[in-house]
Length: 294
Image 1 (cartoon, one colour):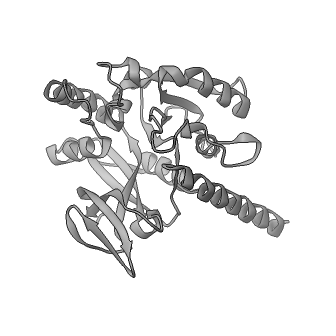
Image 2: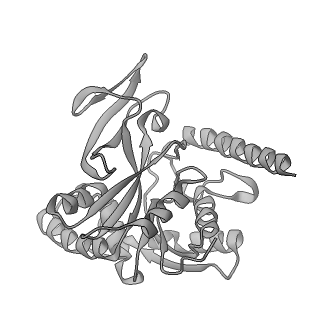
């Protein structure tokens, strides 16, 4: 696989982990203490993306650096950015859009953005990287990985998802943040907006391929958002909503790249056991494939 030195892997690792009760960004899910972000870094390296920027917090800097050096060695091309040091101080992070903007000075080209505590399947990063090289448009082009809704839902409880609609060419034409999505018998229903959803509905899980022009525009959007919400303790500048605004403005074209991978994420302590079982199953499948190829 050729190197993609112009592409940066941007890992969002600044969350507080309140519901998890600790530093979920570094929670062990695999052998030798590997966390989800280690798998993402290795999968990116396998398609030539070796420059890594991690958006974390000041209090996590030393722990994240130590962990990444132990997992990937001193030669890892790593830049650490502190989201809490960018913009006004607040106990709660300002959101995923703000996290990306906080890394703007460390970026000089296209990026693959994803959550450090989410895994998008063994082929997810490869698919989104491929979309960067394939992109052709008269306006800046981005891409998002579209997951089947049913493959992103817990067995119990409810979640929020960005539900997508697209045109015949696979371009995003609408993204609606939908809340209170859960399984009710054989049906999947949402609370806001109210309605039943198809299990095959395409949803965003916050993995994006973005051109630098989109990030520069995000910085402008953040400035407007902050002026409006400077005194709010909870308002969040969210990446999907900001990118949807760019699309509506005609400033960005977004391709929806389909995947049938299973999404793995850690929010609560209970999710950690599920993640470990899923990664063990992936290792077993890889080992079986290797034996079959001999």
